[in-house]
Length: 203
Ligand code: AMP
Image 1: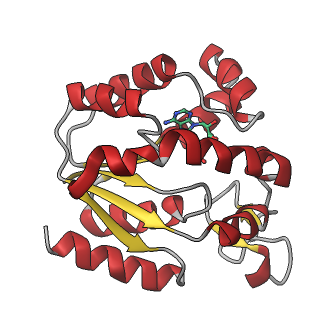
Image 2: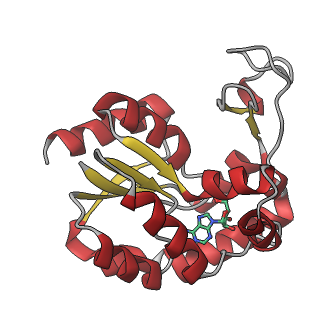
């Protein structure tokens, strides 16, 4: 299965992508994670990406497309692209690279997004994602490591990211038209996943 996952920042793409990839045995390809890995390793790509990510802007299309092209060339099984494409130009570039079996969109009300992202905490050890409202302390409930907040999850940057989503990424829903399967993301993670599995089983 080759699929893409659309949705605003905070829609739950990362959480659902991990569950989908585990259930169906496909690769989870997150462009955000790839950029963060490059930033962590202080590569040239990481240094460039950081200037855009910290400002809540998109990394330029040609840079992002080249990174995805390289990654897909090494892909041997099915995959889920999480956070890509984010612009029409990226979607056109992707079309040149591969066919898709599914375009999944997680739809969440805007007022929920800000709360979800600013309350998000990440475990640097097991990569788990949590929300402060469900935590008793700042320690990972799975592996006990100290949780951190993503640098771009502060309120100012999140607002910029949501504006960028509305201007540049939301038009993809129209671009993919009737191929888009939309799932209501205003529910618990378990309920959203149930909705996604129903959609995928019907394909
Ligand atoms: P994410 O982890 O998907 O929320 O992505 C974090 C940040 O990485 C975004 O706010 C962008 O700055 C950058 N980024 C991730 N994916 C893309 C993409 N497909 N195109 C451009 N920038 C991206």
